[in-house]
Image 1 (cartoon, rainbow, N blue to C red):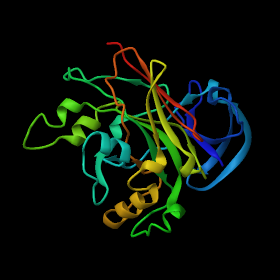
Image 2 (spheres, rainbow, N blue to C red):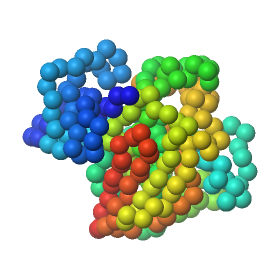
Image 3 (cartoon, one colour):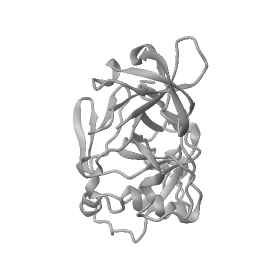
Length: 265
């Protein structure tokens, strides 16, 4: 398994990427600097840097980010919902992307609730169109943590037009990272979300209604997926109000944990 990050060095505006080389806590890891394209023909250099000395970016920059609704069986059952016949999805716009340790900020014109949702993210690695479920793994680069932050009171503010995109796409409402892991064991993955140190979500990837492979295949029938596109696979029970000044951490075994804080003001 390889783990990839993007970063800037101190006092630099140059976006770089590299492969993590240690199996220790994320902040104590080192990264081997690479050149070329993250998704195609990258090459390692001899330069190795300490992660703690870098300014982290999101591990990729998706051209589009999808989010799934009603994709975790236990959440569907507990909420009395019906199982969908096909993946139900919305889009998050790229202004919302936020890296590990980034600060989530509530827009000045919104005074309602903000909630956190810990999710598994799928990162596309190749141009993907009309792909079968069986071949989907060939187009998946890897997996990352997602915190699908939401302003829920906006979704049905206008009863005639559900505003999913608006509620999901405010600046800083799309945290993901800190790294992308390749060749993970999805069957053993458990998504756990912590708020103020207390576990609030705990659900298995094996409880997904639609697997990452099924989702990739479905989406690719209707729109072309490109390297770096990101799919958040949906969330389980336990989503709660994200109070100002508190930290949320998304932990998925096999991935480096994602940590973000809600701004106090």
